[in-house]
Length: 350
Image 1: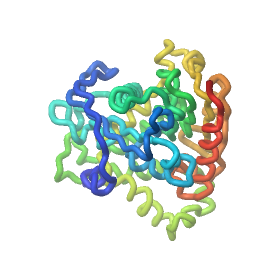
Image 2: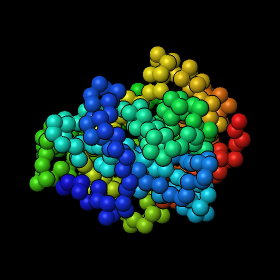
Image 3: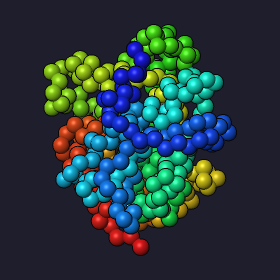
Image 4: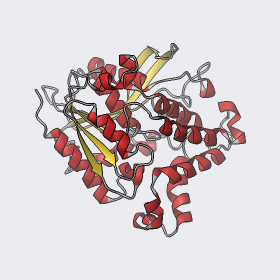
């Protein structure tokens, strides 16, 4: 099954597009005719001083982050102008699934978190005329982009709230990426990334989904049968109706493009490998959100990052949903995220 339905604008609503023209990537390739998809919520103030940027996580789209946005929520479009950018490899922006030869499918060039953030910076400054961000926030790969923003453009970012992410991907975390990639490419129909519209690549996607079920939650989630609270009658029902249903519509090459960025995320590239020096550049008022049961980005790793950011605070979300708490299936997870965002937005800045 191909990803045409998942990437249909009829399902996710119309995106806007910023044409990047010929965009030189960190890998040395030029992505010709590059484009960045994005969505906005709310109204930009006359002073352009009410902007919040919310980059999305691995496998998500700009529409996914509407799980965090809404009237009465902290990210309230009646109060803020919320920009939700796509990312390279996300399916709407330039990606393996929509780029013509010679960079199509498995030949799509390597991209980085830095490439995403540079493209987003151009969107904001060149296209939208925005020079300051009241907050940058995101979870997982969205958190990696948040760290990159705060280190690369410190004067532009007033506040930062990375959730369930690290500023440099730890070695343990790269093994999770290895497993996910190995399962995707284990499908005989994958054909080194050059499958066609008639190919059924569901086997690799199902295997990949199981890996996220193993590590995306925590043991307590399964011990307590927490899937029942999400409307599933059994573990098998949850695996099929939640995990597989989420990943099956996706394009494997797009996921592989994103996972390669996840693996190589590292803000210390700005400071010759010195992570402390890189995080010491951050001037944004920062609250680092960690998840008590996160098996992707464990609490201790998040605590270490927070300790290197001047004036930063660590907040912990207690939940059995592990890394996938960002989906806000439980109202208490949504409330915990909102509370952290509310508190960071209340912090005074110079």
